[in-house]
Image (cartoon, rainbow, N blue to C red; front, side):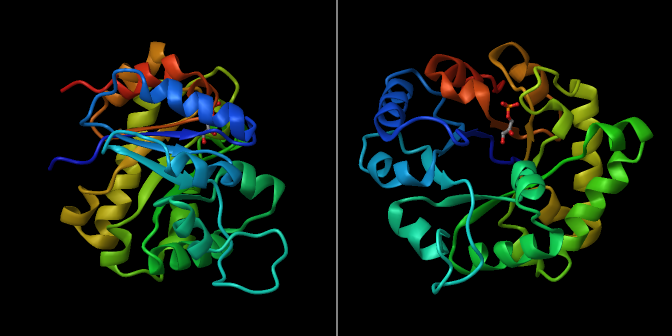
Length: 252
Ligand code: 13P
């Protein structure tokens, strides 16, 4: 089955609004493979301005986080409608930095997933293991537990709308990437788990992205793995040329 190919940029807490606009403009001025879905997740302060800028039909915006309530007294948080009305159609949920620094649990992330889906935002749901878990050999079980505890209550139809990002924490911002074989092993395990949960047909349609030091030099080999459908890119997405090369790294 033909799955969507996605190159997603997570700018994290980088760039001023002006710098973000310049980066977006620079990226849009480059040749980008129209078959790749490009998702730019800037800081939320930038989304509305970027949504007014010219871009290809394959380019979408996403938020990096969202609070799981419709509105109310949650100072500093962003609701799904705020995100949607600012021009984003995607939202990253459960990035390891949120799990670690803001203590976001699998159960709390399930609430976010629920709200995102209710409001028609496409969640990019992140999972990933730390180095200790990888070294102990329990990485597959750890990831499946993360997914299970967040996905259990959802219908097949709902889960069919989710994008998953596997981001080993030991490879994030470290320059160390999972080998293409390590990525494929985990992505296949995730897809097998999804097949048990929602059936093979839906599981085969769910894009699973790899994240962790994706660069122009390693993107095509990683994206070439059977169960890797693209990347969630941090550092290298802050450079228009590098990110364009990553977008163009899918073989036909
Ligand atoms: P790097 O590409 O900088 O390793 O970051 C990966 C990431 O965390 C994307 O969400």
